[in-house]
Image 1: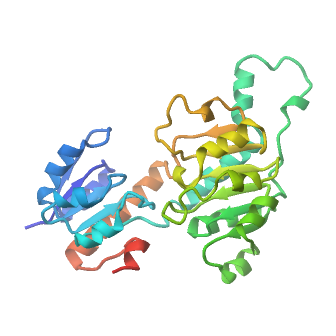
Image 2 (image 1 turned 90 degrees about the vertical axis):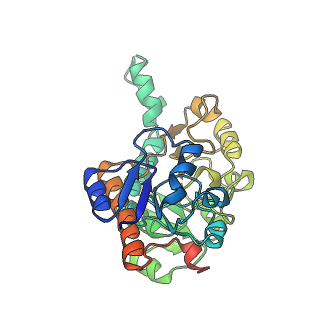
Image 3 (image 1 turned 90 degrees about the horizontal axis):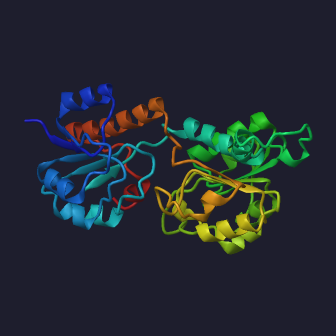
Length: 324
């Protein structure tokens, strides 16, 4: 008899065929998030859960009679309560490394768009305000040859640092663990967080959201940045004090911010960020290409097969692996 899997998200035909080859698969087919009562009913007799974003905690586990694995089709796993999962005998896996190039595309897109004021000037042009030849009021900032500060040098941080070489950027990084081999290979330098914030022209935040990184950038940290600095957040909204960022943007204490993530998602229509010209805002689309999402989903599916059929736990999230 096949193991039972419940998927809280749809997937491509090839991933679905792969899962159905190995499991008795049931899928939430609708585009909106699955309601809690339906999810709790569905997971009573499943061995694995496939998807992303659903909170995996004591409450959910209490409704799952034989759940053994939750496989996130994403690199992030802030939806996992690792302590509750370990106590409940449930392992958590994710899909690391599949989105690095795609998210690096987005990071540089946000950097250039914010520095050169693309969103603001797109609105300016569409509104018919381009009426004369003097382009001085439209000036932005150069990206080429500037100093890039990367906060969090995981695989994604390394990918962004490598891309920066094509822009002849001077790269510094701040990370919980110093990485001399990466420094030598990519010709980048380590710096304290305060030094990075005070000296970088572009600051990119790429840390996971956890107890150590929650609200790691606030009023003091934003106050250290140059007036010409551009801040990019491609991590999680909870890694910064959003109100503190709004204040420095409103007062023009930094040049601008490019944001893929927010405290509240979807963003509230009354969020002050939406009214600021010196922001470029996108709806958490870091890995949002069909090719990348399909690769991530396949990795998540392979993790289910490896664990439930072969007994080999792969792609276990770091916080859990350290406590297993």
